[in-house]
Image 1: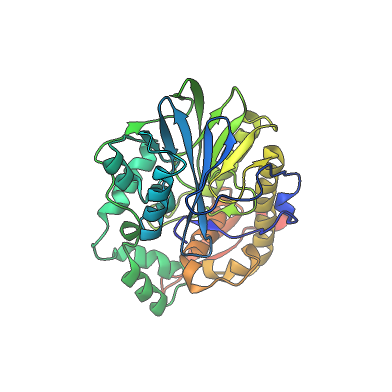
Image 2: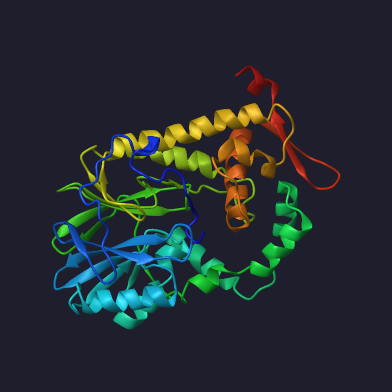
Length: 363
């Protein structure tokens, strides 16, 4: 999926949704906006994938609006923006375009909006630079090192050839990025209108994901960092095969437990606005802990990364999400590897086999 968010729980009865309340359970329709907090409008764009929507927001900024996230670079999203700009945003100027992170459904129309509306782009540095790097891959041949990476994970030749044909798809979902941007950092305070929003950065789902917190009334623009009913994908990719994004993700969730009071209103990128952030953070952490325990049991015998899908995912993994599932499996395997709980051995055919260490077996 374009965003790198994996489906998990799908309704309020799901375990991860316990303890949450939804003050605005009905989402806005085409060309509509709902005021979910003073001066904050919730809008929704469609996506042609299983995760069929992204929430975007407009925050009053003096006589204009600051936009938060943009949707995919597809005709339907551009049409919806046309309706929103002429309708609920009332033709008022856009003062800036803020992107929480660099996944295509969040930055896909950033360049298009910034150019059209003569507005600056605001992002964290690593997210902006990573997006520019990925866009630079558009039209280039698939790198051989990445093919070696997927072979080591257990992909067969047909799967690798399919990946080669699709390589560079990031650039098809993202309009050309602005050549410059305004940087935001963890701890910064953005003045939007006459109110401050504190930047709270998380890692793991993406490298420097920004949440925005209006502390004076407890509104959090959460991006993909804290979603109410699904779990953000946390993956290892060929560009950094030994990374530990799951460790970064769990550390970020634990830190946010100490940052956000439970009464905040979280405005997520997918799903509906909700209260109950502490319960949700606990559920996200607990979900990965359970997955790691299941994974360790599966690794009593040597397994490839593609052999552990059943231990991590509650549903079959189809071709459309095979790369994400591989990346998430490797994130969990690398997490255990970095902590000495598994070993990895590459065989003569270049395939990696993972198994528990003696320490893991007795843990």
